[in-house]
Length: 235
Ligand SMILES: Nc1ncnc2c1ncn2[C@@H]1O[C@H](COP(=O)(O)OP(=O)(O)OP(=O)(O)O)[C@@H](O)[C@H]1O
Image (cartoon, rainbow, N blue to C red; front, side, top):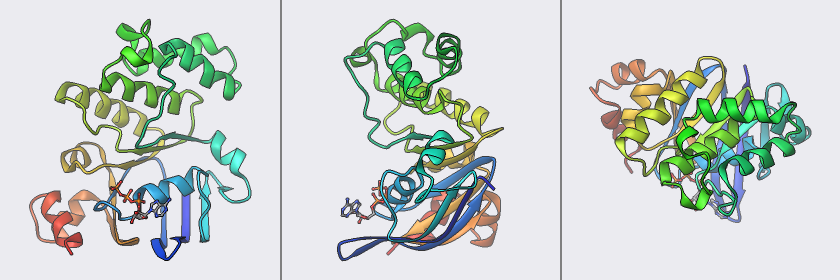
């Protein structure tokens, strides 16, 4: 399994944001769902070594996030919810910058491949500040996959995109999920139906369910994932 989480807990001050969660996942797309404030981003930040957990363990590709953060970062690509970009950089310049950080061999070829894969071709000569929101998301994704990590953590990668952009990014996630382990946080249930093989729902810091979308609908006797989400997380 590429990701193993055991008894993970994060306490901010008095608040338990993540409460003793455990799960494992391998190649494919895992939907990581839950209401606002459930603890999704906190879990993702721990997995990507942005913040330390209070207790419990997390491993990425066999490397421990607490004791082997460099190895974890080599094996993980992260698109944070905020998708902070250097907006004064040109598209290729920003990718070259990230390629330098990862010490990528033959960066020009890899950057050209990634521009092709993420559909950035038509916009590749622009400054990031000149790009539409959808293309900025593509830059965030391009930066996350540039070093060809085995694991991708995508925090609401399609929020605010128009339907055309949505289709493009979802297709890219589907393609990547054929070989990589992807954890995808989203509030869009259509997206879960479209791309996720498996779903974890977290509520108030605890995992309330972990199954395939089909099993979840059947077990909860509902027709849609929206109904299932409300049933498991409302109040
Ligand atoms: N740095 C912090 N300091 C204190 N509390 C925090 C901090 N970051 C998050 N929290 C709290 O932890 C809880 C979980 O937040 P988190 O961002 O993980 O939720 P989320 O599931 O990603 O929510 P959303 O869907 O709204 O993005 C929230 O109550 C939040 O206010």
